[in-house]
Image 1 (tube, rainbow, N blue to C red):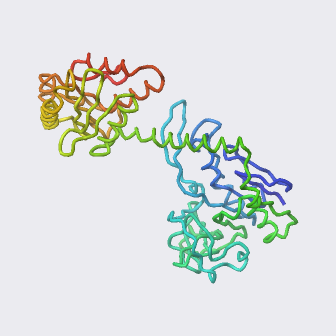
Image 2 (tube, rainbow, N blue to C red):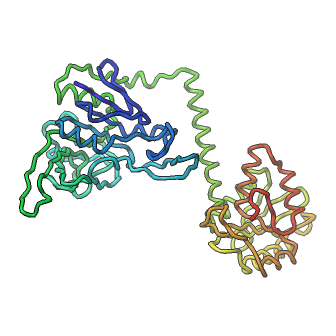
Image 3 (cartoon, rainbow, N blue to C red):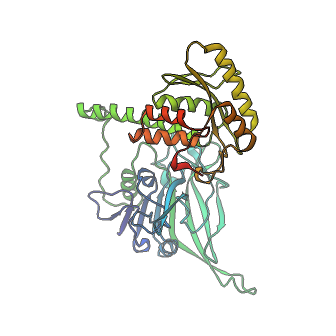
Length: 427
């Protein structure tokens, strides 16, 4: 029996193992097992339409139909999520895209991603009772499937498919299905009722419960459903999985620390699109990350303060889909007057700093001038400064590249005439 696996291998079993960036002729095999979740585990894969070797290689749709015509079997191990974000690379240009991991099938499947673990035992197909139980965990269910069968039109002309439930949730949604395909001949003729020929091949869409691996599930399918002499997968006992070498423990601690740091740094992307309280908080965090002392907002008043050795910058932070308006300049002036009354003896200089995320819904490079006309004139007349959140994000980048220091940023703020300008973001 010719067996193909994608995304995993079967040691000790004669088969062809392929990764998701390796093309394979699906129709040449008797049984094909696809681990779609393995695509989620790879961070180097790009969209199938890309012209680079790292492109995802889905089975060819026509090959799938020929596999079914030949009476062979295709097993799809469902992913944790049906869609995945990936880059599309073509002629050296890159763009972000979203990939549907089931888009290559010759028919449309509607699913809802809602994990659960309630299975109606009476719904389990007889041939699959060895796999499913009432506590089975699943990542998604199929929409619009009745307990018997449901017909849909295939993308290829004159083909129809019938879906049969293998297991259902307690609220009668299918979590595993079998597809069979029929070829209806002579439908082009208005005088013919059509002759239906049902292919003996089948497609199975199955979730992989945490108790199994794709390898283990495949081995059991081969043993139980095809009566092949295959050794079951050796699973690691719980008492062994809890043992770790000292270096393993160190790596776990380091990885957990790095993961936490990554999550914290990821928050700074909010500088590019947020508004309101979220933007006010992340602006203060960004200045703190750059090494500045900050003071939190004054409820109903200023949005915080950034302190240097000689200067206190009073903040007004604002996100808008347009240019920054006069109202925000007026507010900043009120906050500065209040701060001068409150801290006049504490700082040599107290200056207003308007931090703006103007045109926040546009990509940074496509944004227009953030402040113009009377708002800009009034800001200049008061001797205040304007810093875009895009520039603040760029300062974080430069700081982490050791290309700019805290004192450099301090000088930049002091020496700039009104609108702080970085060459990378001049418009």
